[in-house]
Every structure is written in structure tokens, then in C-alpha cells.
Length: 239
Image (spheres, rainbow, N blue to C red):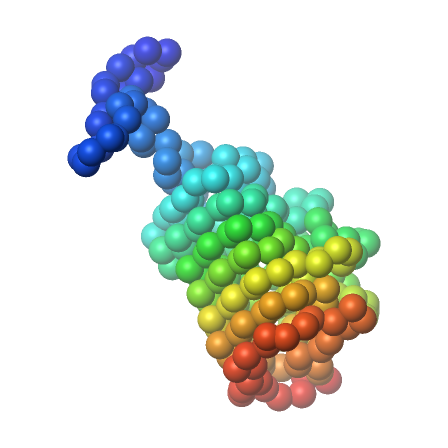
């Protein structure tokens, strides 16, 4: 039973240790959100925009566990926001756009928008690509840690129609983000791979770019030190 006062809501839970506070098993279980809680399929074909937006919104202040090796497809008018204070464990899963994202270039227009105090082991985004596809991922928040970030477009020269469109933009379009750490960045088939802007404190393990025209680009209001160990590897001009 899942009604009010039934099932896990009627079972008590007390963590081992001194001074622990009793709560219900329902409260304990809700510390973690699972993609299955929203009934996501993850077949890479079904448009699950509403479900993805819902599960990401519900994960603020919690840990989100994605299903094993799934592809979550979306086709929203605006990007998906990873809420502040969210931890994500990908378990081999990724996000995929079904249609190219076109329009104005604001933070919310990117395929994935990363907020503040976010910890992600692996974030992989597959975009349709093409000259008019506006962008992949923007990290607009502070205190962000991502182990591996991979953004792949389906066509070479993607986002080539707009100077402000990129596979990955680190830093918001207005204001300043602070303390961002990314272990590995991999981008493929983007006209401009990685842009740094309005960032104070960025640490990157290494960057691997494949088929790009501009690899690492600094815009006005640039990042400030420390920026450590940034290396472009395996890159080639994409034309």
C-alpha cells in the first residue's frame, strides 16, 4: 500500500549510532531518487522530456540514480536543468536529443544546464548536431564537480552558425561561477568545442576534442586562475 500513513510511511527507521533521530522508512527511502521512480524507459527513441524534467527537479538536495546503461531521449523547447545541490550517478546512462535545439542563446537554451553544488560522476550528452544546433552543456553554477563530461554531436561543424554556440560552456552568460572541477572533457563534431567565461577557479584533468575548428576558447570576462592541467588531445580541424 502506498496511501498516506501506509506502507513505508508506517514503518519506523533508526540509523545505527549515538544520537540518531527516528524517522519513517519512507523518509529514508526518499534520500535517493531513482529514474525508475518516474517510470523512465531509456530506450533512446521514446520522447521522455516531461519525465526527465520531473526527475531532475525532484532530485534537488538528493542523489539521483540513473538506470543501468540507458539512453534518455528528450525534445524539449528549452534545456534540461540539473537542480542545485544534486548528486547524479549515471551507471553508464546518457541523455540524447531527438531534435536539434535551435533558438536564442541563453543559459536555459542549452541541452543540459548544470546548477550549483552539483556532483556528477559521468555526464554524457548526445546532440543531433548541424550548423543550427545551438549547444550541448552549460555549467552556470558554482561548486560543481564532474568526473567525466562527454558531449557528442551527430554532424561535424555543429553549432557553426553562431559564435556563442558550443559543445561545452563553462561559466554563465551573466554573473560569475566559482570552483568548477572536471576530470575529463570529451567533445566531438562541434565547431567550437569548449568555451570558458565568467569563471573564477577552474580545474580540468584533460580535454580531448575530435573534429573541431576551435578547441579551447576564452571569451570576455575570462576565467581566472587557478586553471590546471588543461591539455587538448587527439584533436583535428573539423572545417
